[in-house]
Each structure stands twice: as structure tokens, then as C-alpha cells.
Length: 146
Image 1 (cartoon, rainbow, N blue to C red):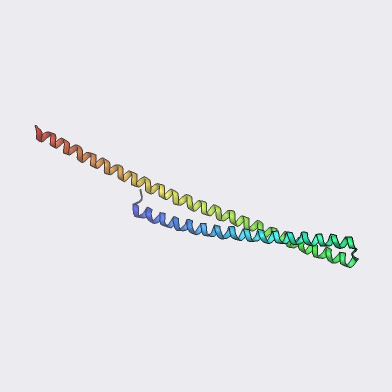
Image 2 (image 1 turned 90 degrees about the vertical axis):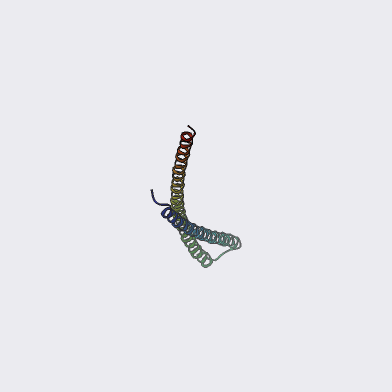
């Protein structure tokens, strides 16, 4: 089994890696939230513009006004679709970063388990050595009493 200092080094490295992965995950989650808020803003603006158009239709709208509306709505729809793609990519990055963090955490915990196991084995050896020493001492005491 690896010596304790090597395991401690591995645990420290894995902890650093996990902390870095957690920071990257946090940044990705924030970026995803930002992209979603921009999407919601665009969708809200599109809804407002569509409502204004409906109001304009009720009052009467020229062919040129109708065409301008259609062109602008097409641009808004394109912007919404584009932002939706950005949101989807941001969600993918969040999931990738989450998986990287989980992998790092799993590795860190595995090293911790190895360190605990090594410590338990060392403790068992010490207990066995102490028991043997006590048995030998008791045997010597018994011989001297005779």
C-alpha cells in the first residue's frame, strides 16, 4: 500500500482539483442563469411588441407598417432562437462541469478511504504488537513467580 505521505499528497491534490471544479461549476451555473434571464427578457420583449402590434391592428395599420412589424418580429424570433441555443450550450457546460466536480469528489473520497484503511491497518498492527508484548510480559511474570 502507498505510504501515508503519498496518500496525503494525493488527497491534497484531489481536494484542490475538486475545489477548482466546484468553482468552475459555480461560474457555469451563474453563466447559465444569466443566459436564461436574457432569454426571458427577449421573450418578454417579443410578447410586448406582439401586444402593441395587436393594438395597432385594432386601430388600423398600413401595409408598410405591417411589413415592418413582420420584419422586426422575424428578427426577434431569430434572436430568441439564437439565445435559446446559447442557453442550451450553457446548460451543457453546467452538466459537464457537474460531472467533472463529481469525478473529482469521487477521487478525493477514494483516496480518503485508502488513507482510512491504511490507518486502520496500522492501528491493527500496533494493537497486535502491543498484545504480543503484553502476552510476553505476562508469560515472563508467570515464569518468575514459579
